[in-house]
Length: 406
View 1 (cartoon, rainbow, N blue to C red):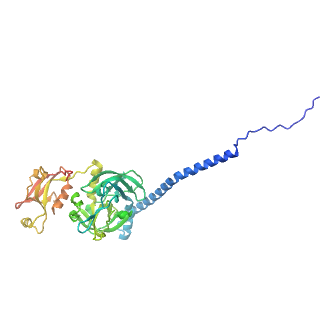
View 2 (tube, rainbow, N blue to C red):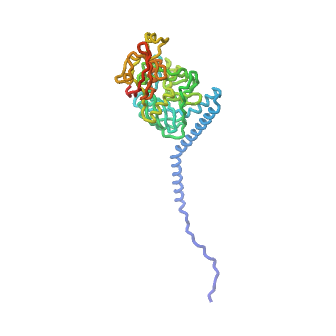
View 3 (cartoon, helix red, strand yellow):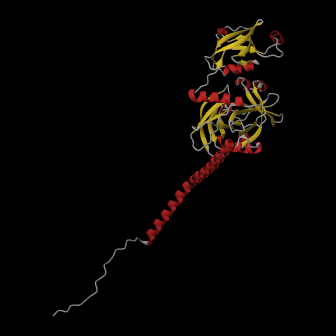
């Protein structure tokens, strides 16, 4: 008889899912090294982006608060208002770094007409005027540029594309492909008054975001180019009505902003008269915003600038002309010659005529005449008042287009 025995069931055998300790250790080390490598590769970029975002946030917050304050407090005391204007508009002013094919470009003039110029790697200023990334600066800042870099107020440096330039007016337009930047609003330079307080913002001597204050010393300085006589620039830039200011404008300020106490752009800083030892004399010049914006709009919309021209050669009045017209002082422009087939000749103007009035504008000098004619849209018919052999005549002149080689 067989005997039955009760036995405990045997435990099932399990196959271990773990690898060898050595293999696990090697895998851990490899993963750790991979993590360290990725961290090293991307940490600078991440840190840089965080820094940029932080700076951008601060700049935008300060500008937003300042602009709101200026709108809400139009009669704020000057000291406090100046600080808010600076915070509101400074982020829109950039540094322009240029590697040029030949020496250029800063215009600083000694009392005797001698000019100084920088060489090689140059820097100027610019103003962001459009959310599409358009920047206005001086043409002489980017002249001969092989490479243009734009330094934003938060420290970012981006490539600048030259959209167009107008050597005669000394205005150039750049464009940057960037985001999170601050723009400035155009002001009306024709509404500015002598004695009005202004700020100049730029990068003199490569000192980023330098702000100086002063007043409008004079308007419509048509003779500024004559003051710069003897320098090559006098032959490059036709005369127009500069704003004069005692706000310090130094090498590097060219292309920067001249703003009013509402934080509006009223001028593009362009030149100064230096002292004998190269210091600032308190005489600086800016291209009025009304003229700069006209050039900017034409460059952006049609890629070129078209300006008025009638083809006359003029001189200042002599004492005989003044006596004949019964004036106490010389005012007007005497015609001494014509360009062949010019609009002035076609309209019937003659040698010896004295142009006294252009449309609704009284002409003060030959330089003034050049200024008002160039600002007239080609094709416009303008009534021109002239003094001819003892009598005043009004002659309609159809304005032509200024040739590019003039």
